[in-house]
Image 1: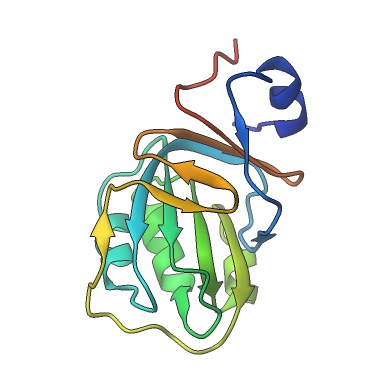
Image 2: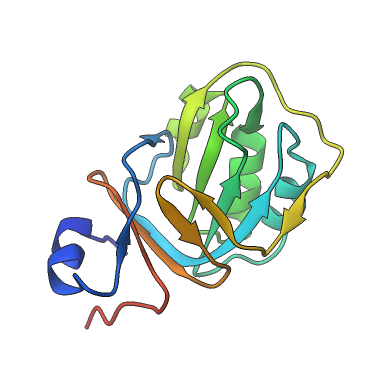
Length: 161
C-alpha cells in the first residue's frame, strides 16, 4: 500500500509522532508501513537476520543500531530474506551495504548511511523493547508509515478507509 505521510499528518495531527528527517531511502519501495518489531544491537547483525527469518506480513523491522556508521547491519541477502518472509520494510538507525542491489529489491529500506564493511554476526542484542532515536520513542507494536517525504509513528493503526 502507498502512504502519503503529509496527508496522514494533516488527518491525524494529534495522534502521530514525526520522526526526525535523518534517513536515506535505499530500497526499491519508497512507501511502506506496518506494525513495528524492534531490534536493538550495535555493530552486530545476527539478531536482525534471525528476526527477518520469521513471518513479517504487515510488519516493519525497526533497528536501533546506535547510529553506527562503522559497520553495515543490513545487506542484499538480509533484504531478500525480509522479502521472502513478507516484511513491508526496514528502518535502520545504522548503516547498510550493497546499495545498488538494495535499490533493485521491492522492499522499503531506510538507513542513515552506507558503508562496505559488514557487521559481526554474534546475535548480540535485544528484540521487542522500546528504543529511542530520531526524536521519537518506538514501542513494539507501534505502527510506522513511511514515504519519500518522511516517517511517522502511531501507537495504533491509522484508519485509512
